[in-house]
Image 1 (cartoon, rainbow, N blue to C red):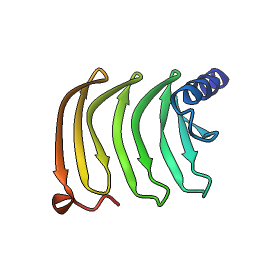
Image 2: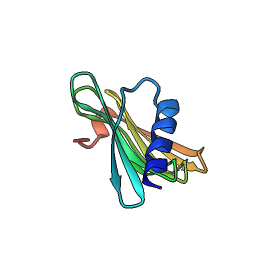
Image 3: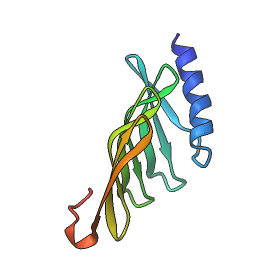
Length: 115
């Protein structure tokens, strides 16, 4: 079963994150934790797979280690509040079954530190 989970995670991660390098996979209970890295060694993104599907919190970072996004997957679908940072704004996107339910944005001067 453990091998099936890891193989499933590799296959899905290859399709979902084709631009990313090969992930480092770790078994954590009934989930597989996947960590993707930039060429400079910084973490690109990190999250879990359960039964071959994205599950739980996923975090993406830029090449300097600053958060770019954070959100939740449940059974392979985006769910709940996701936050997306860039140099000028923060966007809060509410998802329901991987569909955008609402979007809010804030300009740089209203942002809280993302580190």
